[in-house]
Amino acid sequence: MSRLRPLISAQLQVPFRGNSAGLHPLTWGQKDLYQALARYSRTFNMKATVPVPANVDLPQVGDALRWALERYEGLRTVFPASREWTAQQCVLQEGRLSVPVLPTGREGEPGTEQHGFGRPFDLAAELPIRCALIADGGVPRRLVLELSRLTADLWARRILERTLAARLAGAAHWQAGPAHQPADQATAESQPASTAASAASAAYIARLLDTYPVTAFPAPGRADESTRAHAVPSRPRAKMTSPALGWAVGVLSRRYRVSVPSVYLAYVALLISALSGTQRFIANMVSSNRWIPGGRDYLGTLNQYVPVAIHLGEADFPAVLRRVQSASLLGFSHGLYDIADLKALAGHDALGQVDCTINVSQPRGRSRLNESRPSAAVMAATSVTELPQVDDFPGEIRRSLHLLAGGTSDEPQLTLTVNRSVVPVRPDALLRDLESRAVRDAEAAGRH
Image (tube, rainbow, N blue to C red; front, top):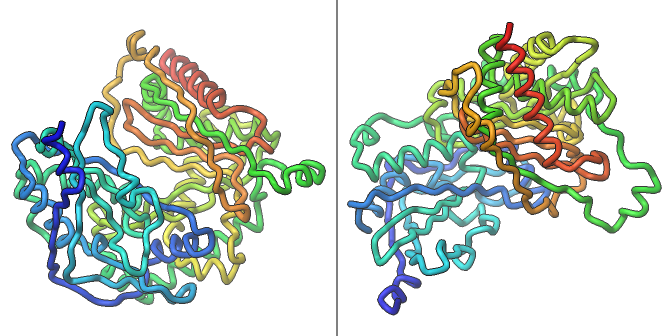
């Protein structure tokens, strides 16, 4: 064990020098998140892990990180402090990333908190990436990354994980081809066609917010508010991993020719309706906006909220699927906009008053579970765990129910957060109910 002690304070220094530098306006996605960070002072960070192949040494790990920093401008961008809406992105041409090398021990994974992980980034002065290298007996095993959401959304995080893994494995094709950069995106968004599209999208969203109820659940009554005046609302979270749900969603998507996100949205809409008693409301969805030129390989944040109008009426389940698919496609077609345009029409935090949010972030891919009914082992493989509740949620935002559908098509991972002051059912019970209903509907669809 004494042999490993020097690694605790070891630092892998990664100098970089890119081909570009400069000061640019924020992209629309950055501006949207910058507003949230400025108003709520929350930690919008994401973590990622990249395995290091057995034959890769410390200098090669440093080379891979230097390549990423030089290829992707967003990883070497800071955001000079200024008044709201006037912040800019400053691409640094050169600099250095310090990577602590941490040993594994008998306790397993070492903590990274003492190296700055888990705290907000200093956006004006700090690179928007933190990295630690986990080593076993001095041999690199995995990279642990933390990214600011101003630099990467979930899609971009996967790009970085995939490209770093390929680079570490020696794949030369990641060396070629220019990347679409946030500075390029800011330039594209400043063009007349883009500003006109943003204005049209903002007008559509404002009309929707005026036409449909933005809240599905009633606010707590006065008595409840007075008793909770100095208390943090209970927002329990639960996570479910369910191959059975992946099978069911795949069957329903193919049977009714709708997208996987539409299937999840339909079930959440039915769940909300059953809990709230309303059949007409708005839900926020996250538009990935990866349709832009170069978007599939763009390392930057493009995600923006877009409201989707839900109107269930007396429709049967196939009709609900078709309705929510049409509504979500219409919403996503207006999902890329300048938040300043929406603020001018609908107020400073209009979308924050929508109390139900759904984010489907599964990578696209056809499920391998195509049989009429998967094995008993697959059907029994569901796991549900409770997560720490959200204690720092901004009071200005109404969020009664928030579903994140991640994982893969074969093994989806659903994380559900509810506000118990308005949603009286625990999230783990709601997730199990969603799974059981989807499996029943898929079995019924397979019989027809």
